[in-house]
Image (tube, rainbow, N blue to C red; front, side, top):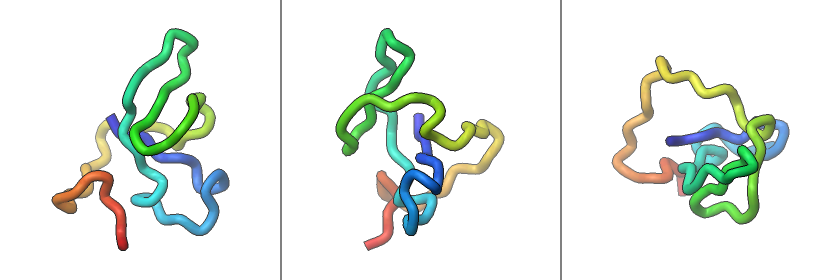
Amino acid sequence: MLVTFRAELMPGRDRRERTFRVKELLPSGRISLHEVDGEHAEKEFEPVHFDRPLERTGEFPPRTA
């Protein structure tokens, strides 16, 4: 599952640069992410919209150079 940090937590980065794959759901309700240290709470992320089409770039995470 992918989650996107809210823009105000990562200013100057576009959506692709703020999107990460969930590694683990922790017993506390927090999550750990691939390529990001620490535990993170739901309030740090944009709401998940399951009806939003996925961006297909052929790479993950879908980042620009």
